[in-house]
Length: 309
Image (cartoon, rainbow, N blue to C red):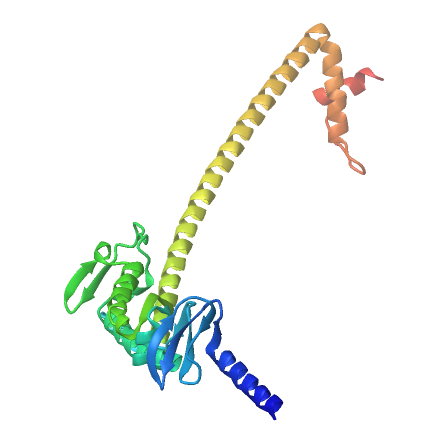
């Protein structure tokens, strides 16, 4: 009987001991509740103790958590309707306050939905679309002398704030509302910006028209350069031909002059023989195949035939 009682007592003691000891894993934190009400918190990992039976442990993440919102359709300041998709990172910095206000991660996500969606809507509707998509280092080219008109007021491109500044202001505004829930909002980012379907079609059409205009300008410039190159080529070709003809005439003139000089020199050496040779050449040129030559016997052309008899 004693042995049985000892075993029961030991079992109860062991159960109490096990219930009094708990472990907080690395990357987590915990609060101690007594009859459902929070009475303490543990922010560091390790082995810890609590009052058995009447106290419970609620564990929460110490690591950075992610929030993803649903895409929202929001008009910008310049009346451009866009879909905007945002994301944020947050963590629990005060687990007791967190447990009292939102209790669970689902409750925290719901609070963040309300806070961030509201802040994003205000930020987007108060900025131009160009400010949401451009970085602070954006610089328009010389061709792009951009101005923006909002409600009859013109705004120069250099007066716009960049996307980074918009996000920084958005973060500061949203961050001011989260400490009351024991939450620290680390950052907020825009994952994607897109036009609504109706506006997107018009934007694509405008982009196509702009590209067509640029292509037409390039083609026009290309045609102008082509005409200039062809004109230059024609001028150079004419110059080359003219120079070649001039050189040809000079060469022919020199050749004719040399031939004439040779003929004159040969004639002066033996005029009679030269005359005889030229006459023979004339006979050959005058009398063709199957041809007949009719001349008078008194003709000088017939002189050497008469001498040959």
